[in-house]
Length: 186
Image 1 (spheres, helix red, strand yellow):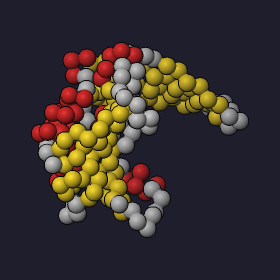
Image 2 (cartoon, rainbow, N blue to C red; image 1 turned 90 degrees about the vertical axis):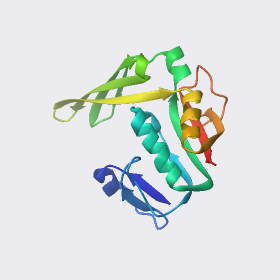
Image 3 (cartoon, rainbow, N blue to C red; image 1 turned 90 degrees about the horizontal axis):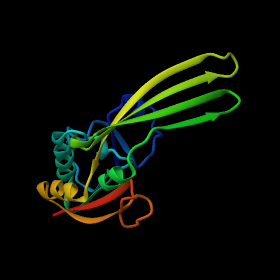
Image 4 (tube, rainbow, N blue to C red; image 1 turned 135 degrees about the horizontal axis):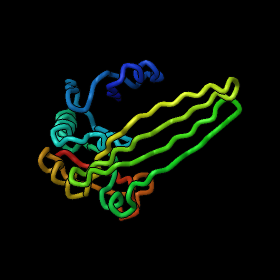
C-alpha cells in the first residue's frame, strides 16, 4: 500500500506501518512506476477538486496507476441531495474542563459551478486562564451527479461498477449527501 499526501505536516504525523509507504504528492502529479489493484480517495477528496482540469488530472493519475480491471473508488458530495437539502448554517459547541469550542459553519453556493464554500469560524476559550482565540477556515467543495462521474470515467478509460450511499450502500437519493462510486479500468 502507498499513501499519497500533499501535506508534509500530515506525513510527519502518520503512524508508521510495515506494509505502507507514505509519499508526499498530489492527485495530479503523482507518477509512480508501480501499478495497483485499487486507487482509493476517501472523505470527499474528489469533491475538493473544484476545477475541471483538476478532475481530469485526478482521473488520469488514477488510470495511469491501475492495470486493466483495477478499481478506482471514491466518495463525493451528491448534487441531487445538495440541491434538495440545501446547505445551511450550523453552530456546534463543545466543552470539557480545559477548553470551550464554538464552530459556526456558513455555506455559500455557486450554483452554476456546482460549488459550495463552507466558512468555519472558530472561537476557543481556555477555561483555566479565560484566553480567547478566534480563527476561520474555508473549504470549497464540488458536488456531482452520477452522469458527470460517468462522463469523466468514460473519458479516462473507466466503467461504472457501483454507486451507493457512503457507508450504508443504500441507493442514492435526494437525501444522500455522500455517494460512493466504484469504477473499473477497462
